[in-house]
Length: 127
Image 1 (cartoon, helix red, strand yellow):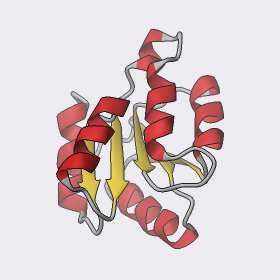
Image 2: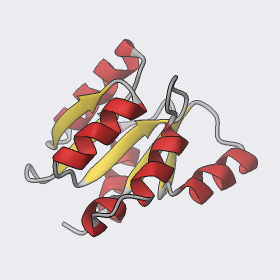
Image 3: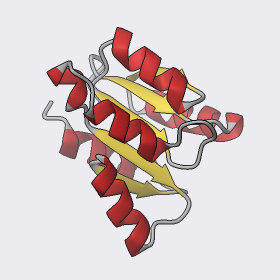
Image 4: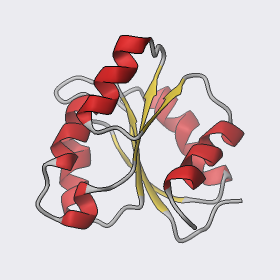
């Protein structure tokens, strides 16, 4: 099970996907907050301490890759280096390269199970 101290921000504009991801992360034992856009997520990141960002790639206004790039430009060193897992329905070689170049640490292809998500979280955060 996850460590209750870890606070994860889930960024997802699709309400059904947000609900499913939220339930999955809660069942792993992590504390969560949610944002329905990259813009909202960036505002929350600036004012709240998170341990990891879980973001959808395809979103209007500011997509997950733009969000990752914006996080990497923050002045706060801790926030600038937040681990970011991008969620996508498709991850071809070009998409993976683009995501990694934007500042994403890992990519998880939907649908995914709790085990694969928890392994990535634990890989990125030393508990």
